[in-house]
Length: 354
Image 1 (cartoon, rainbow, N blue to C red):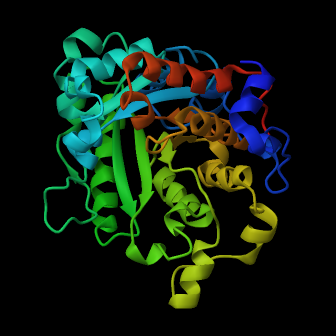
Image 2 (cartoon, helix red, strand yellow; image 1 turned 120 degrees about the vertical axis):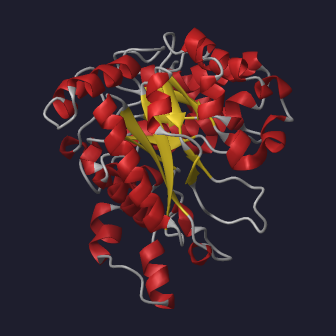
């Protein structure tokens, strides 16, 4: 994609293409590239079998051998209810169409539930890397609560031929310690069986949201969630794109909450969306665990929003996007176009590391 087209999508935010980071320099990061596995994972404690599955995902799809990832995630049938997720496009009640969208869209992998991927595993597991998302927050419990629990077992993912397992931890929630313990054990088993691990590092606490700001999207809090995620050996971190900063500062005016340092806000993470996202990368062991940002909900300007998110992630030193609703809540042809548009940002030499 040429620079002029990218600028058209960005509109009045095209300055994102020229921003130079003032916090952590790009030279300090472990950046995505063709040699990422050799540089980062071979010196680690990951087994040869895990490395082989990581190689599969990095060598698949339109972004193969670039070090960047484009993943289609469709676990919303549980997380947001099937009706709310698929009513716009009912073909995706059928799991085969989810996998077809990922393949036709040139993705590196498809991430979905045990049931979705298991229903078509013999046909498609050899054709595209599977990431089996094992825990979920279902919405039939009344009243709803922020609680992730396991719908399947690691060995089931292994037996269907999956390349990886995925899980969510709601850091900050009442159940977070239990979720950390359960997911630590799941990740250990996955690595022992030769699969890599992907962690949705999300925040959930009513105190994090005010009338003025939603600190669930704060760079300092999401950065710390990432740091906890890599502590249990997540190979890839999925995180929401940060939109603000100062979550620790706000919470410490309301009550005693954690610890922070004023240099985060002045030196390490100045006020800019690329700096915010770089701070997420920094907390993922300076990029040793790749940061993939979520694409967010579907809306009126999905293509422009997808370009903006991809530009911010790439320029920050991130590894790619995991975009679901923007792709599957529209006709398949348009979904493929959106996924390809995201990939074009990572293929573009005009979008550089800030």
